[in-house]
Image (cartoon, rainbow over all chains, first blue to last red; front, side):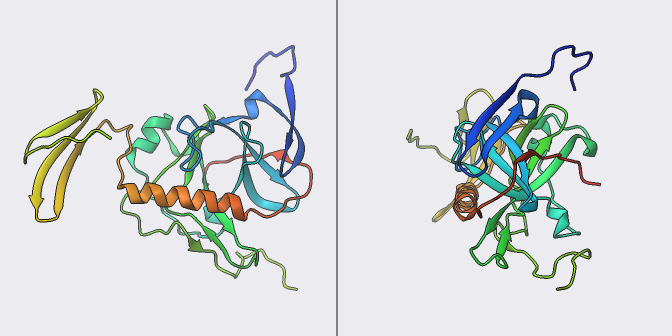
Length: 160
Length: 78
């Protein structure tokens, strides 16, 4: 958080393939120092939400405007998700306690939207204090990279 | 790719911080010990490759989105 800022933070507008025009400030950016598996050269990302998909957090690359990866809070879908996070995750991201970080998992959305899968085996951890993130591979995981998402939505869904 | 031959109990240094030790050899299987700092991830290659594939698939499958994009608010697990 900027303190005593007499000046507003400079904002940048970019044209994104998926979302059109988007305006952001440097403090909105999440840095992935190690990139992401499959995208090792992309280090600067913006987490976005849009009205059409309120539960998704899209990681939008600022270095390749074609790249936007959908993620979701895994506990919205799996209340009992208990990732056994290896030490390197916390060490390399300088995470000291639970309040320091958010967890998001990549989702694959099939054309039939009822058949989504989620990667519970490699969650993305975001250090909320220093804005750095990394996709982590859990040790000896019984979780799948393509875990089917239960069709029944959690408690708060409306019936048709 | 650098190819080195080692006997059991011999080892290889990668950089200053990573050591790979040949622990055992049994027919077609080699048991390796890895010493690395806590900050360095160590994984079987096929695991890493599967994550790559899954990420690329997520990008390819992503649905069209509409509405003005907003910077997401990220929160720790409750």
